[in-house]
Length: 272
Figure 1 (cartoon, rainbow, N blue to C red):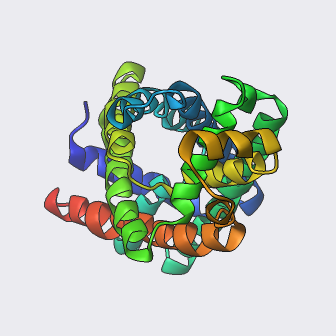
Figure 2 (tube, rainbow, N blue to C red):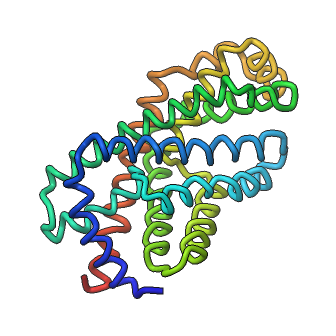
């Protein structure tokens, strides 16, 4: 493995090309990353949807979900949460703060589009019919929980999430071989999923998937029977609640976690 200082220096140098990358190319890489994270999220739901014990369900989901970040790391796609680490290059004046903001906005929007594309195709594929529609009901349950977080909870969970995601990215950057990179991604992202933290890009799949599933009367019926939801509770699964109760606070938390709680401190303690 490289030393952490060497990995940071390599990452910082790589940020120069990243922030100057043409917007259309950056956007396409971000679409790819959004789809990959959505694949991991969708697979984790399939794996966990019929497990009653919460701890075991999260453990099983955590074994599957890391595949998304593995694909991102190995293909060079652009993921918003990992790209928050570019603040290290900004602090070292390798590029301006304006360029960093522009890059993050383009990547965020690309991740969103990629996640939504995968969500729609996944629904059409009939995957939510697994277990006689229980997967569709579970998808509604997951989304409903995310839409009913209070701001502080979502913010704190987002901070904790991106400390781990950025740790996975930087440890993968230290590894010199494919196996090392994949193992670094796997175990740390497993921890984040088991802990139940909030990841803005993953939520770009989970919540829209629940909204689409709610359009199917079978899935709604199963959700009411399996989880005891009322029509009033299900009505809280909507776009405003997704944006204001989840996406905004979680995104802010991911930024703070990746930049202030991990990226900048990591750079300074390693003398970069």
